[in-house]
Image 1 (cartoon, rainbow, N blue to C red):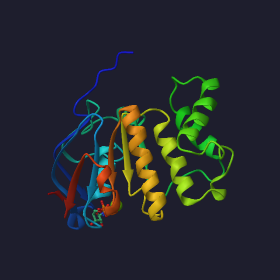
Image 2 (image 1 turned 135 degrees about the horizontal axis):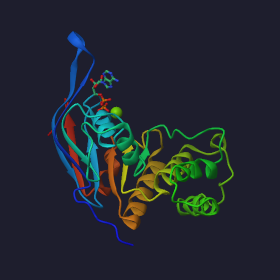
Image 3 (image 1 turned 30 degrees about the vertical axis):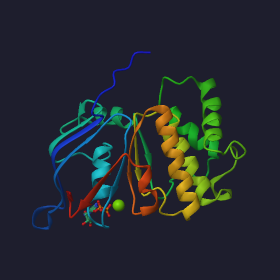
Amino acid sequence: MTQTILSPIISARNLNHYFGQGALRKQALYDINLDLDFGEIVIMTGPSGSGKTTLLTLLGGLRSAHEGSLKILGQEICGASKQQLTQVRKRIGYIFQANNLMTFLSAKQNVKMSLELHENFLDEKIDAKAIAMLESVGLGNRVDYYPENLSGGQKQRVAIARALVSHPKIVLADEPTAALDKKSGRDVVELMQKLAKEQGCTILLVTHDNRILDVADRIIYMEDGRLV
Ligand code: ADP
Ligand code: MG
């Protein structure tokens, strides 16, 4: 398989971002410069309201950048079309604080949904892939359970399986351990670290949790909309 390894995976230059209009317009991000390299795990910390989620959603192509340059997997995002943004998003795995699982779908169906977005996976293979991924996050005996019958840590592990099953080049995680107890939080992060190293994907993880900082290759700090 030939696949070009684009380095850096994400490159932001002089990014500014604003919320609101007219007199209410307020700048949320100031002059952000950041490179994420192939395979590295970067943790972003900083006070509440400092702009971490705003930056994460920009880097994930979930909102469009206002000023500056942002390249995701080689694609310039500033001024990109909706179609180009959609293509980029398919190559990124997202994990949020609330696991955002579909409550009316089983663990396996939640993971499968992510694969069904990719035309290159054949129908027959999707089931087996989803089960294998759930096994690798330690939920092989929970594939047919619905979210309401899973613990917080188990649901977050389903969310990790869903994010990683399509082998994305980038995983963005916004406070993935915030709703978990210490032990489950630690387990979840170590699992992300293991799978990322196996699959060679880059992780950017926002957290307030000082106990997980050691999994990072690099720690960045956000304050008042600036990386310091
Ligand atoms: P963090 O994730 O570090 O807590 P956020 O990125 O959520 O910070 O927020 C950064 C700043 O932008 C805050 O002042 C917040 O109030 C503001 N903000 C975030 N989202 C919006 C929005 N949709 N509309 C207006 N202001 C927002
Ligand atoms: Mg936030």
